[in-house]
Length: 380
Image: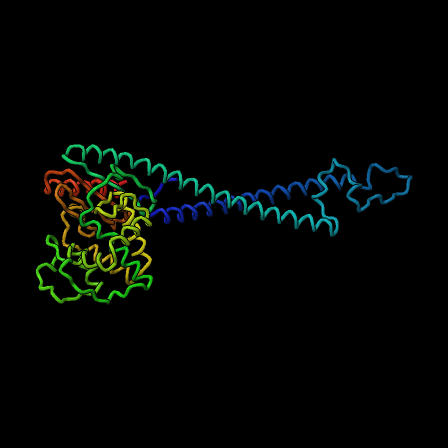
């Protein structure tokens, strides 16, 4: 059975189940017609045999009185005449018929269950075969990044099938601004749970000040307060460091790190801002599910991530209509971009690096990695 690559896994399963059911009922109808024809022929032959056995002509002498010897007792009928069950005799046979039909219904149900199981096995086998094909993509990426100075860690998650693979995915990398991904998820989950009011304000302190990325550094901040919602937004859209520091102070760095561990983070350090591609991909997968499950909050978080001002890496070479919810990160020798690519077959792609000697080269490498993954996923 050939798969339509443009359909999602769920749509493929539904389509194949429909086709299997249609074939099942066609075959069942054909078998029923054959059985009815066979029974009619057997009954016809049995009646002819009975006429010969119970006939008053020929076997009785003319001088002997004719005695009707027919008894309505199945045991009196010779085995050579056929199966007794083909002739109805009273109430007992009714029970036998009911049992037969119950057995027939049960058999039909079992057959349908077997068909369902076969469909699942076909789907699983096909998915396994498709996942095995990801080895080609992994090999291509490994060959590509091997040409450049520094190390590039990659982690990929197919959000339709759940299949994952990585390259140097669990090594420690300086997280830089990608830490704002789990920070936002942590706070949004608190808002969802009703533990935090996003309109609550947080006052700026001098300890919150940090240069680099962001828009708050250009403002007069003494005595100013900002809502949690606003700080969350600009920490993503403008990668604002001051907004991030205010949120970390308010919610607690240690609490954030503990939460990252509860999510399954494997590279988490209370004293260092570090992570890895596998962890970042896992945080993003949680965000993808959160956005799907929460109308307003999910739309807000997705909007922030898809409207960042930094689009020189993962989204750069992709079609303009493809939305990319992502977060970049930069530090000396470390250039990252991690995100959710909302293609026809959505997926998570996290790329982190260390030891790179050129930011521009690293931007290009990440953009090419993103393009290679996109082309492969959408042309399989």
